[in-house]
Image (spheres, rainbow, N blue to C red):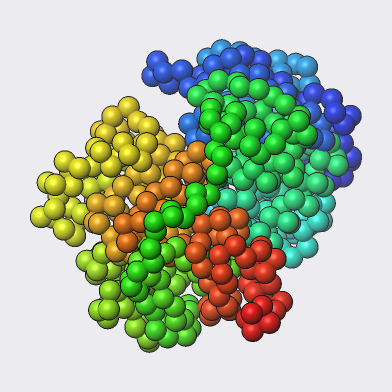
Length: 515
């Protein structure tokens, strides 16, 4: 292992000194300015938060610092010397590493092979065979410096959880003797208890003088971790302020340009809970067991629990993605034999998946084609009317795009999620199954999704929602069902505390004790 690695030698810079400075950074794509005149300073041993709505320019700024994009204007200084990165490898070699939201790991290779890919230690010089033993020792040393003791260097990456893969990405970044580490939504796929491990790793890194640029839509993390916060809006630098001088309400106002006085919209006064829309009776398969619950028209039921508790698998079973081995699914009083997602759609079940890019969208197709995809495939007779109504639906959802023919891959995460919602609204759903509906989208887009959920319940739609963000579960649910080990651990009323939900999710208390 390189002796300059922070784990071996202490801080590379005195705490508080400027390690990286961006001045007047500007970037244009096809004549459109997406980032203009942005200034940024990252200091040794400090976490610097970067926030803004989707499309504000955060990813573009990070990619310029990482060598993915070349700035069209402005300069980047590292330790007082102007640098220009034409490739991510150049940035890594200079000590600037990035942990992107999309993992860049080879699933069929081991942890050690992924971390040292292309830099494997050799036994007899560059042409010699890989020194596997040294590579594993170096990996163990790297993990020890990060306070990680559960991972084994020889484990295949495909056998790791999402949280463990995130740790491998961070370790890989550190292995380049990183002076600066950029983290893009590092907790987007993590449960709360996994976030704590990430916090401890960040604390160790900053203690050694590493400067961290931290991007997250979770405002609690921004205030927990960051000493300084930079806010972008529409590609412009709004302000850089000490975190201690900002409140969440002020931060949101600066990000979206307006106050969100009630982040979670109240249940409408005229809202009525109607008949049972969705009923599960002793549902089970290889993923969940003995699950029984009801969701009524006009009601939002939140599914809480740790990752691996069976929340996603339950929604997939209801929708027909996973086979139903026993029990029954009843929609509007009619028992369904859901053997495929197509049959789920015919029963007017809508499923917002947690991974919109892989499972929810055809990224290289247009907005309008994505929005009409489900109704065209399952209810072709309704395609004409849906096409006429869709521009109004997309406008109501506040989708920001150049035109409806724009490819979805070029939209921000928040706008992509709105397109997913639009395609399911086209079937006029009775039941909306939502798996992490606001993952990776900004606070303004989140608020619009929450408003839409309330609008749909007012129209009699039943909503069953999975979320790893406890404030979201508590703030939006009319009832909370907590899962553990594929079973229902208990049910809680609206407004229950995070501690109570976690106690059920972890098995610290039983349902009858909570009651």
